[in-house]
Image (tube, rainbow over all chains, first blue to last red; front, side):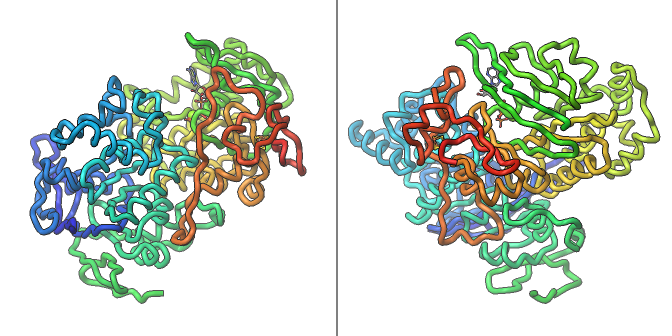
Length: 295
Length: 313
Ligand SMILES: Nc1ncnc2c1ncn2[C@@H]1O[C@H](COP(=O)(O)OP(=O)(O)OP(=O)(O)O)[C@@H](O)[C@H]1O
Ligand code: SF4
Ligand SMILES: [Mg+2]
């Protein structure tokens, strides 16, 4: 079962009378396959969240299409059985007056009304254990009584109750401390090895590098570089990717005195295309120029 | 030594009792030093920063002393602190970007701020500093809302150091910024120190990789106490406190192939500070804990400038 994005574009009308348009996502194509994490990397305003929400059917693309197993994705029960999202602020996904068990019961009411209560309990127990939570410890609690990491895992557990194939994870660790963040990342890695496909949306390059097989770098709504994570991070070719990577603080090296000679990011409005520079490694080049040698 | 803090205790008054947010913290910041203050959410970083400039109504100084440039800093006395604020100690608060008054043009805001301290604007100097941080001079005629995140942050930095304070406290000022802007802002802080706009600095962040880039010394706090303090490179490459070690080894990095190597986090959570447990606060998460840890480990100097509060260090 493959989740495909073909030429997905999302524009918004802006300005006083909706006279101008803003292209938040510009002609993005990408495939998600089972058992693979794709990180969608971009800074604020790059369109990564818009794209994630489009995949979840929360926004309708202006152009292009999203298909699951060849069939057009339509938001609705059939689609959400297989494709779910988890977001940055786990507290906002919860009604604070509902305890965790109630939040989970809503899944049963909606998707599995016919399942017997005893069997349902078994399923809950299993999915909580799959995300490393102790059912007795979390079920009777209100959201504010859980830590950020516990809540994030609870939301993933809830998604797992469905016949989940793909998870869109949008900045899910950015509210967590370093000491708990890695557990949530490792949980995604476990689920991946059991066949889940994950679209991991993040602004944090080190997390993308840790978790994903493939990386897609977005800049102003466009894919500027994509490919195997090792290629994108180890041999970045687009000036924007190079600039991002040189800005990431590392424990292995201090920023040196001067900035490396980073080529200016081209902001050419003209036509540009994605060029395959190495097998599977695509880089955006403006129409007229450049086939830079791979160093 | 610019700043000396001894056995500082600051509590929050709540209906359920006093939250012991700072429970006996001692350290110094040398002249020209940038001290990076790191630790998990809730360990007391913001409380420490605020204590050195303005306690809010729910905070109470429960003990300890602070000196600035060799003289007492009367942190427990709101009125006596007034002559120090902004002139001698300046704070860029967490979420300061949204804290700028939106209804005032920036130039006017600066004039009013300085007037309230009995000072007037040295326009030439202000413009020189705007040039330095690459902000256009006409920014003074704009409203805060017209600025991007990075511009706002640089503007706040210029404003809060206009009177060349001895100490600047910067609380998570880069956390909401994109990486490239974050780098520019962090480097500007170093430049401010190098040019003497501030003598010394406390740079608060939960991001150790970032603080390592600009700090001379890093202090790691845990649950209202000091866990470890050492030169930045020592904290990163030879940490001695189990908490620091586990924290450092839980950080994914670019430039590292993680495929074969899983990192691990720290199980559990820090203790509640309403009624903190006796002994080492890290005890119930610490793999090295032993009987002795039921007693408080005092910070000891294991090497020059390297302080660790752990019985095993
Ligand atoms: N107004 C308050 N009333 C009661 N407790 C408070 C209050 N403000 C903070 N605390 C508590 O004091 C402790 C220290 O909080 P502080 O904000 O200093 O942490 P921090 O290290 O700055 O965290 P973060 O990284 O999340 O900014 C925490 O346990 C917190 O819950
Ligand atoms: S004092 Fe004991 S419990 Fe605390 S960090 Fe050291 S070994 Fe661990
Ligand atoms: Mg804080």
